[in-house]
Amino acid sequence: MSDLLRVRDLSTRFFTEKGQVNACESISFDVQEEEVFGVVGESGSGKSVAALSIIDLVESPGKITSGEVWYRNATLAEEVEGDRPEAVDGEFVDIRQLTTRERRALRGPSFSMIFQDPMSSLNPSIPVGEQIAEAVEVQRRARSNPRSTRSRTQGYGLASLVAGTVLPSQSYVSEPSRAKAIELLEQVGIPDPADRADEYPHQFSGGMLQRAMIAQALAGEPDLLIADEPTTALDVTIQAQILDLLRDLQADTGMSIMLITHNLGVVARMCDRVGVMYAGELVERGTLEDVFDAPVHPYTQGLLGSLPDLEDPAPRLQPIEGNVPDLLDSEMGERCYFADRCPKAMEECLSHPSMHDAGGSTEHEARCVLTETEYDESRALSSNHFGESQTEEKR
Ligand SMILES: Nc1ncnc2c1ncn2[C@@H]1O[C@H](COP(=O)(O)OP(=O)(O)OP(=O)(O)O)[C@@H](O)[C@H]1O
Ligand code: NI
Image (cartoon, rainbow, N blue to C red; front, side, top):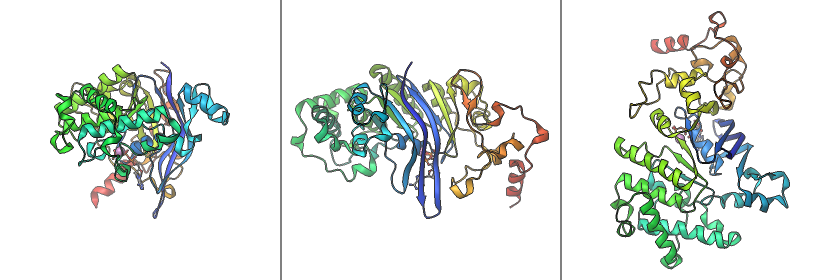
């Protein structure tokens, strides 16, 4: 299977009043064609920021400070190669080297994103079918005239930007786009799509709204759909239906999916490969089997901890004692970011580990000294998490 996306050393920082927050720290991973790539990690570990960084939606005071995002698209590569050969490598284009405008034009036909809350993508005062038809129309026009209209896609599907988007009048949407919208509603499993298209978002149930948002995200026939906690707000039965839908759509369309979730059951059910994030870094990645059956990083082991069994419909991340650091640059220091919570922290962990081969498949890597060294209690760090949690309990 070949790569669709190669993310290399991507770093995103927020420049806040409290200081510089390292939300994403030199992240590297690949998303292959036609796969579901899962991203797991506790709250605040940088999953959403990583996703937003790929699709260039990081908002102020955030800024992508370094890194490359190589996207396979032969047509784009050909377009760019003439004047910016350094941004092209074979069929890949480093989208970080494109202009903001060019990158934004990729939203829709190349990348699109869905969220936990459908109302972040749908306008409550416009019929659902109309909004999807609008998304189709934007893509249709962009394809026929890439230079002049692609900027209209700016922000579609995004809460913060949708609010500021002037929606075109009825007449803007052509008949074929309306028909395509109904087709999309049907494709995502909405019954009586022609009738439902005329209804407003509040007339849809949560699950149906989620489906409508997915239809909207599919309007541009994206190569990569990024789904950020797409089912967390739904009840378990509906969650399963939406996940099945995503899996089916992936197979039907051949797109890739980057799936962000807290739920390890969702990962086990959906993902081909997985990345585990901790404190803004990717700390382990590999195939589902690598990460679930032979995790090397104590953080991954902790998350999987007493994972009851994979038949459980909703196993959650196991709580690990202590908290994710707040990612302030001034407080991050040189040691492994997990060392303070790690039951296997050793003296070696005082210097920051890099990614190393972790056994299993060729892709399995972890950012941990245990890839190279056996745990040795005699070298255990004295200020490990046991000491800290005891003082916390006394308080
Ligand atoms: N707008 C912002 N301003 C300042 N810091 C931010 C902002 N957005 C995110 N961050 C920082 O980036 C870090 C990573 O946030 P992110 O939302 O990516 O985490 P996450 O893994 O997606 O968490 P969750 O599972 O809760 O969605 C946060 O800890 C926060 O410190
Ligand atoms: Ni998030």
